[in-house]
Length: 46
Image (cartoon, rainbow, N blue to C red; front, top):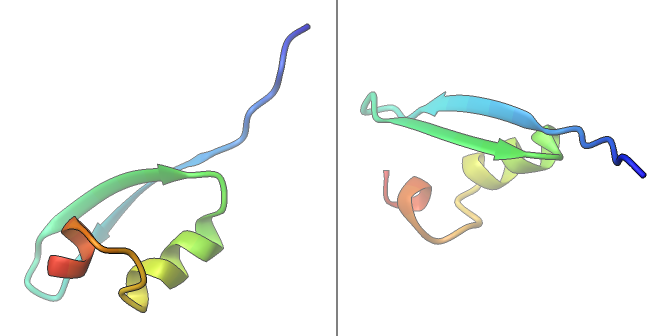
């Protein structure tokens, strides 16, 4: 049986111009996480 997957590939830029590329299955939630520094790691640092 074949499964269908839906996901988004996105590119975001910080105020300093650093680019971040990611993918997710919930684009609205992921943008919220980025903009509110909810996830530790690369995007929180930049």
